[in-house]
Length: 301
Length: 267
Image (cartoon, rainbow over all chains, first blue to last red; front, top):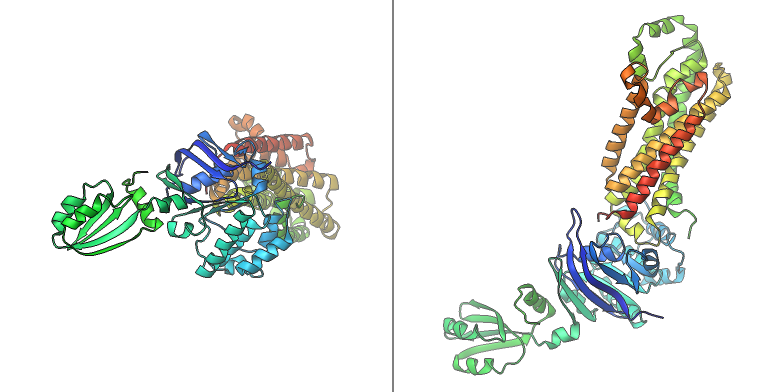
């Protein structure tokens, strides 16, 4: 039976020397979904991910992967997952093919056809020593080794770093197909823009704590909009707009006001009508801006 | 799954450097052995050596220096210092690199995200160190066995074998020590530094304990003592010392496995 939850973190706290810890992380990721784990560098993404694979041990709380405990059942977890480390390296003296063989030799199950397909789709260089490969070409090898045994769950730490845009698109298709077959993909990123194309759900982590977990659709539906208005009296406009509950992130430059609006415009429009608006531009905020709103702690979830 | 994925990959990676290392070691031994007839015939050198203070000789692993016989000559020239040193360079270098070095280079994360246990990684690495030590011992034994009739060394093959066993086990124990320190610190440099310091100390303990009475009891904790003391090439190896060395190695590995299983790896 397939566990409906692919990853569950329950009050997970990991603190260790030299490392950026996480505190009291709670998270649930549905099987068959793509989860985007977002946060800036140093927020604790890698710490949480490495705990899933038993490279780090929970100080308190627990991490459950595919219904299995991250410490006690680690071997079984690692058998059924694929992992791309954030700082992906391979032995430089091996060729790509040798490195993939070596990693496959650490597993019981291998599928040469599957590897062949991945190698072709991503355009992987197999026959040159790894030390001669660019960052992007190494990263492609990393993707192949994470997917080559067709695991139930793929965990990818900053998977697209170094990839050129065409390969990124192919990678996104790969991730979607994987999820479409009922398998799960957990990927971290510091760019929401990138994740919103592939993820169903986004979790935002900041300074070791979860800020929010929401579906990408809900994030968009929250209706955060970005508005730029030009008015005759910017100071007056700022004074009247800044106290409205729907308005956040208000910035003034000259006669322009730049603001984020969430929810309804009902309170905003009468105020604008009074203000002698010269020009008005409103557009849907992209997730980066929603994300930034979370970061400033100015959003009301 | 390959039967020993870590061991076989490491051996494959090292086959070329191991080959050249072996050629070098064999060459060195042949040169030393080839000098024996000359030194044997010129009594002056033996007298010269006799005049050295005993302390200096002991420091270089030479006790009962006796150039009159092939075994005495080789015990001083090879087995007192150079052969153990070469063996330790090989096993400690590999031991420090295989887990500590892998963690330092960021490879250990990837390796351990596969379904292979930490204990397995450590024990296969220990097997690598043991294999390297054994290959080294085999080369030393084979080269000397071949040189023996050519240069009139008149070695006892049993004593030669015992001497080599001592060196192999010594190299294995200290190689395992470097392996374990590397696995616990995640640093190849620290592994080499700490294990190297322990090796140097235990060498001094073993050799100086013959001169300084206050140090005598301490020789019993030195792996060198159980490998090289009393010129085994001349007087024969004390076979039960091999068991002590194996026990020391097993203790190091056991502690290593227990602590390695529990630690947080650095990324």
